[in-house]
Image 1 (cartoon, rainbow, N blue to C red):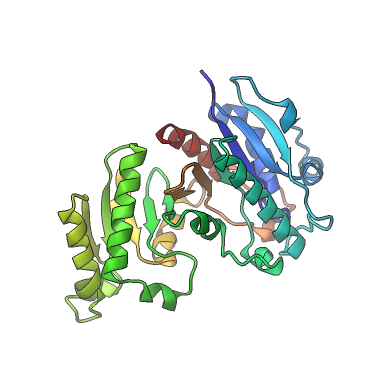
Image 2: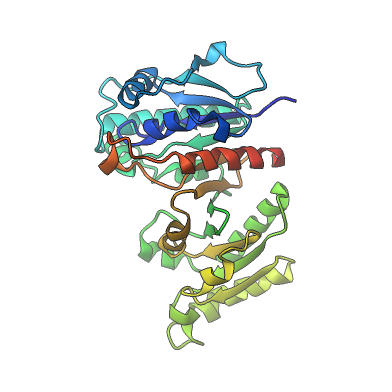
Length: 325
């Protein structure tokens, strides 16, 4: 039986992406059965190999393929000459990481690869390079407006109604019509991927979910009516629940997805329990996209201290999700 092909983007060359990827493919026994194609620069990978003392066999992409065992190859994406300044944001690294990602998405849309696993990028580096997207999900949302940012681990699963935007702007999005559209989109996606039957818990916006209007009325005016309408349409959804207790209800429940209304409401809880092994999943795409739940970690670059665990989990989940496409 043919194995899937997973594309991994190198991420920001100045961050821990190259280190994490080399450590990942050096742990063959921990990896799912897949061919892995690295989208990045051979020059940058070779420098990282020397720094880490690792030398996994990586073939040029055009010479790889056809084997049913894990095989690693490099799809060369030329990087700007100054790229690979380590430990801090830079325009050259921002441009390079965007080019790696853009090429991998292109190959996924063409059907050359089955999934994209993205190495961490620096939003600051992208900005320095003149790239206006706030991150991977925002770029994908331009092409696929139905894309939803979610985070998965064995202990907790979270989807975000809003993500990379100022809090003031995120709060202004909490309207019944927009919430209902989001809920129903999420339901359709889960029906499509057919992993298992999920239930959905919605967080409130205010302390104590508004305390019957004493601490804010968004729950009464916007959130509860959207939840009720989604339930009427057959979605197994409940809420809104007080944000300070909702994660106690979903923690350790593998078939429960918590819906957070803004970025930090969901990710503070998620990263407390799943920072090492959490996976970022973009739902609603025609291909699978996952990524480690960590950033570029400029502060530990060059210390050989980065863990590949989240990258390994990202690969495993990508392979698990591929049959649903």
